[in-house]
Length: 175
Image (cartoon, rainbow, N blue to C red):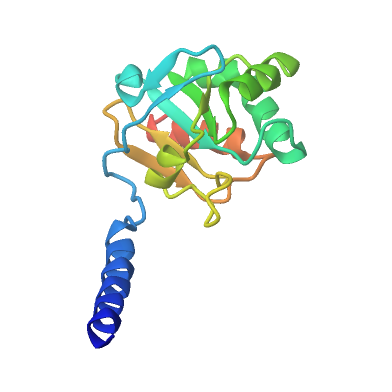
């Protein structure tokens, strides 16, 4: 009995420290953006390397077709020409599946990829997965053409996120 108790205690300690070690440090401006390889609403896979040489606004959002997420997506849609004129691509990510993304993109004529992170692994690498693991946090990462994080928007504003990205892109590009 005593050995089982000691083993149980050691296992609990190992699990605790293992989970602490697995917890990533918060991402910082200037560090390489974590890689990803996820399908979009059409089933096409996207990797971070696909955006090398371009600016990337990678935004994590909570759920397709909810009021705040719809507002944020539509603001990016409405500003897409300004963003592309600045050399930026827009990509949304949530834990919804590709079918849900396809319906959402079609309903609101979204002209950019929505990536299905159904296991939440990419959101976790970007420290953008809620603690319950069921949904992404509303965070946006502006990634430079070399694949490094240029700007982080935590708890991004649904109404201002796209405009903030545009303003910061202009500053970063010296425009």
